[in-house]
Length: 251
Image (cartoon, rainbow, N blue to C red; front, side, top):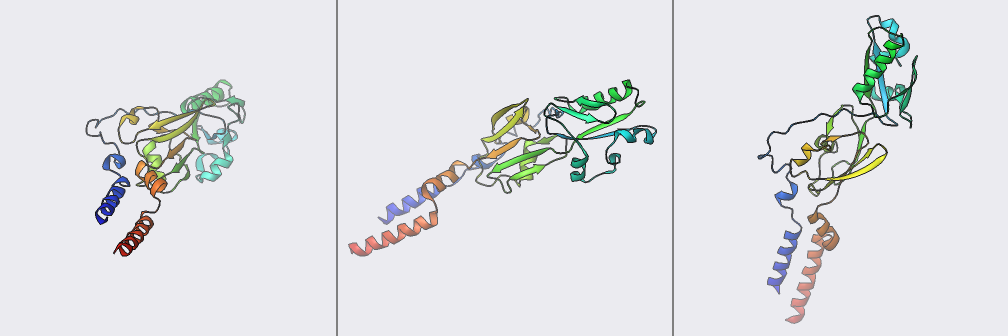
């Protein structure tokens, strides 16, 4: 009986252990040491908040086209409050130009459009226009150290960088099936990503887009231990008591 008990405990421990194939990232990195990166320019969507700065050789001439004193403001919350909120129709109300449609334009395209409108409308000569998204955020849920919603100001942030904001996956995170949800032109898409290979680096999901949601589910050993076994220490204690009782009664 003791032998059977020892075998049971051994099998139980094996079933709740994760192998290196479950927890190592980019396991084929030796085979794919070089990957071409295609940087993406974020396209403007409804509810985006844009910080738009206009500069000219004569600073005073650009004052009517700037909010909050131009580029001097550095507090991100102030930038959001003073920024341009993109409407559900993808438009903003810009000083001197009125309603401008920026929907689905990239940041660079929006800069060029505003510059053209200022020049062609006779407002400014050779202005420099800078557009920046100031409310980009990603939500990370599940088996990570610090789940939550994180703001970022970079134009490009990778999936791995986003997970780093949440403190990385826990040892119980399922690395070969990361779920990412994304809104594209009013349609929500769901994709599954395997972080144990480098293949995702070649896909459109290598870079995070604003309002993406990343979900990290529990891996199989964690599900097994929590779903069937529960607290292993408590189970072993109960079995030990039963075994001791059986031995005493059968003597």
